Image (cartoon, rainbow, N blue to C red; front, side, top):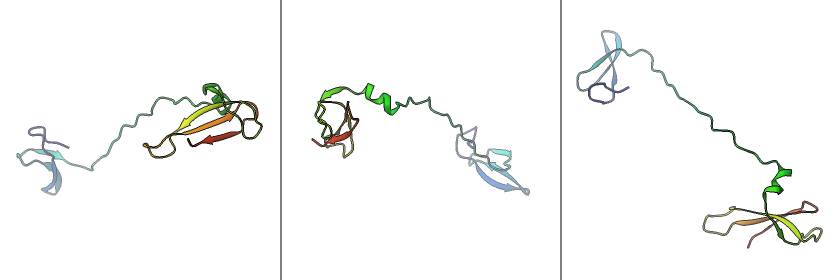
Length: 105
């Protein structure tokens, strides 16, 4: 707690067998009692989660050959998997067989 007169931190002190909070400026509060700690926690708004089946609809479809089935189209996205000064990792998912692979270029 802080002093209402000067704004300094109030310090606990025993006076006549009871605890009081005092300030260097001379202010003294009533009985200090047991300290209480309160915290206000607010939950963030709900985060939209894209389901794995719907995830493909959000990624662009590009020309890329699947190493598994040789289909010519794949969904594409990037993720920064290494340090920030390095290029992001490119991920692909085959449109036909759903095989996923990555490209480190």
